[in-house]
Image (tube, rainbow, N blue to C red; front, side, top):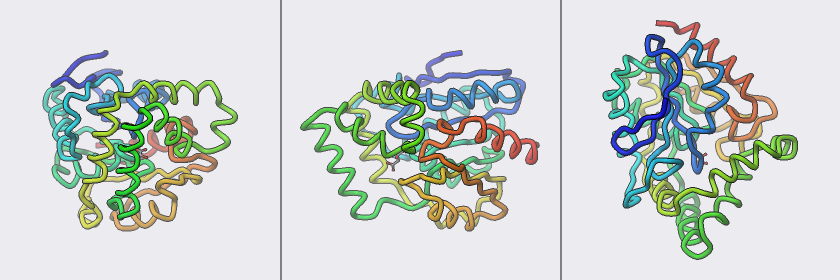
Length: 264
Ligand code: MLT
């Protein structure tokens, strides 16, 4: 089902009587990146995904976003859909949002799944790259920015062996709103560091990382996982930053197994 909540495009699948899970996509993608998870997991779970403000079908408005406002959006979705203790699953930027959501309101969630993400903030180099990205979009357009950014997110193997699927993802990203993409870059540059909260997380957690992730590599994610009590850490062989897209069946198996083990 497709619905609108506070101008956000929301997509739900599965029975509302089942345990719910909210999927938060990465940048500069949209809800579509979770398609393989929704297809397989919606038999057992009430799957909720949405387009982060400014990306996919959710309008950018004035583009003045913060990670805090993205967390507000998650809270609104939980309230409006009356979700009871959903699982929160975020990838990369979706993971930054998920980590901050857990820090702000952990009691609302029953478990967290963090894919290819980190608790750390951008260092100065990273902040300058965000600024360069905004400049590049202003000067050359969003399509060019996206066509240079997206390949960093996938393993070489996936791009060469799954040309059609890769092209589809790329084309969706290319059609993103420039205001939305720039707004997300600023929001990520201005995010807070959630590292100090990691040792306080008391809900079950699954940490998933593509073996070839260039943006949030396994050594960075392992350090994060080590700080979370009882976390489950999984490396996805042969996958890059977009592990749930690149190795969907393996990732789905890990998510389903984890949720069975931590069933409420
Ligand atoms: C993402 O996949 O969401 C982005 O790579 C995150 C980032 O640029 O920090």
